[in-house]
Length: 109
Image (cartoon, rainbow, N blue to C red; front, side, top):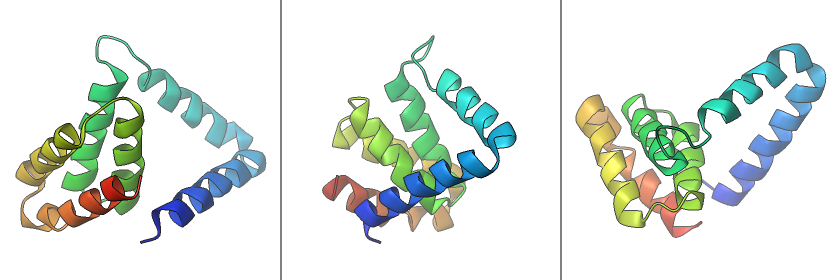
């Protein structure tokens, strides 16, 4: 996967969807940003949780986005890999196959 290309296309797609369906997309994005703001849990912790869930539910896009988000929020590569491994514990063998993707995104961001 070309991480840079994926992120560029994803952001472009979100912008286009926001223009086409503002009544549904904008409220979700507002909710997302409210939830993912620092609160009782830090943004870093929330990004690590989201990453673990992404691994557990086998969501490739979630993995890419939340590895990036965790790094921006100050998570170390060790914290990111450990969170991904928690996702494997919760998701079993199929989730294990996402660890190389986590490492790839870490290496290219």
